[in-house]
Image 1 (cartoon, helix red, strand yellow):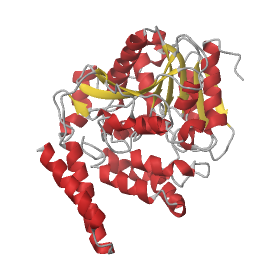
Image 2: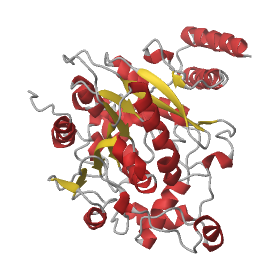
Image 3: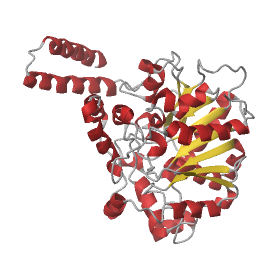
Image 4: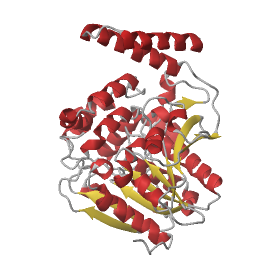
Length: 434
């Protein structure tokens, strides 16, 4: 079947190249080409292999054939690997790795650093700003072994040993399961692959939520975290000021447990092409920032086409529902299933609080917050700080610095990335940087 589809695709591509140049015929053929290409991709399903996957190091050889983080890394001339991990509950996750850099002049072991993305995001979020501003590239240039996580549900980690993503049961998870299953599986794999005893951790938003779940519920993992660098950690959520969150919160809470987004491949492709045009970049920035009240004035507009080509990452409806539960309760605790099921799961009518007093990595936790973040408020950050043992609070001085500016701002190199690298360097005694 795959060969037949390929022959059809090749024929249509040839017809398209020879076709009348009228808008109508071109549009019809383009739609057919996109559909056949998509069918070619999804029909090539193979048996899942775990461990190190991409032996060529070329972005085009990755199993996902649209724009990917692997292609972005390769396009910038960095070596790239993909690694596949299976969680205890059967989800199959892909991680990306930048094992070295031509700009690294040091010999010896490279300390591993794991970067964890936030909700509706993917590993690519750290890569789209390019080698000058992107934290993974900057870390690789400073001689670190860089790993990028992809949580369950996103297009790189949308596989399971028994379930299909088309089944609602595949989506019966929140960020609690990511903290209990995804993150420990990835950490264990990285430390085994690198033969290291601990790693550095960098996260944004929900990525920090799942770290707090892991370290509080499985405190044995604290000794495996050298430094924890938390950007806009979405932990306590009692005081968000985001108007869209308030407007649609009750609607989201009523959604059944399923995928929050439908098929996005074709939409990503079209937006990626459309937003390459400079005169449309402001419009595309506004489109991407629909989750915020207005587009950030500090956003890196050159990254917009890549952002739209790779985002949003698919999520379960339970993830935003879980955050809304935190807003309503003012607590940081597991998912509330209702009194009857709570009693079976937790032996009480309400979920217990996560034991944050058990969170104690090998160095003080670094938290980065801003005044302009309408999702993670100053009050909620200070509540988190009060629950933790050793914390260093870093405040971004830009008043308009938004929740997504921690990842996509045109100023992240100096405002966020260099301070994070300095913390990691100090732990590794790499203090003689130029």
